[in-house]
Length: 70
Image 1 (spheres, rainbow, N blue to C red):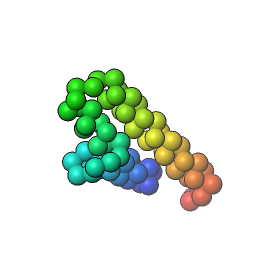
Image 2 (cartoon, one colour):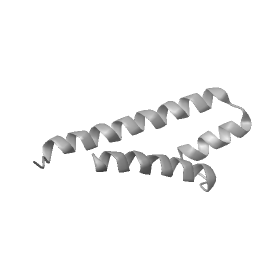
Image 3 (tube, helix red, strand yellow):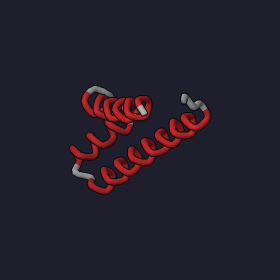
Image 4 (tube, one colour):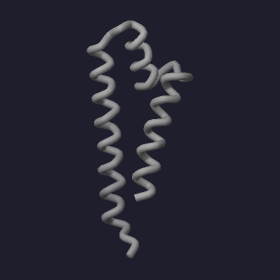
C-alpha cells in the first residue's frame, strides 16, 4: 500500500516539476497548452496523465500479488 501511495505522489510531483522547470514532458505540454489556451490539448494531456497513472498503479498492484508479505 505504501508503494502504491508513494508512486502516485511521485507521479504527481514529476508532472508538476515538468510544468515549472522542464522544457519537455507531459507537464510542460499541459503548461504550454494552457498558455496558448488550447483546451483540447489540455484535456488530451490530462487524459494521458491519468491513463499513465492507472497503468503504473496496475503494475504495482500486479507486483503486490506476486510478492505477498503475510
